[in-house]
Length: 154
Image (cartoon, rainbow, N blue to C red):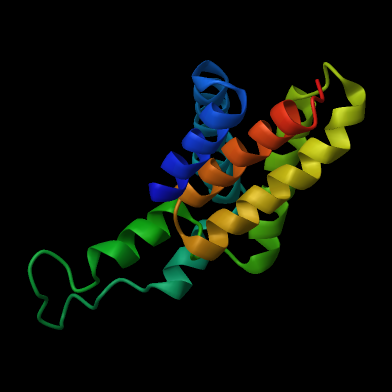
């Protein structure tokens, strides 16, 4: 959260508060849509249901269970989202599909598509590495401020 505030302060000092707010909202919106929502959905659709069952088997009915279930909630949530249970190849295919959709959304200027594709893969890698959506949001906001503000690119 502090990184996002620092990005906002830098952008406001360099180009004005409305510019910084616009870049922060763009980073927030695009990362929530593509990295936080679309990427896990793509991985979930590409993963087989058998993968999660093998990774986190259900506890035996004969064995006594702790209330409400033997597995911790975090393990169940990870398995439900498909991110932790899916094999690396499936995660890669999900990342490539998400990056392709992100690049297609930036086709108004065709020369931006390869940059958007690579950028999206980087944001997904950052999300996977940190486990938090806030780092990709901050990085995306900072990138937009640099791209539009400092470099003056369209």
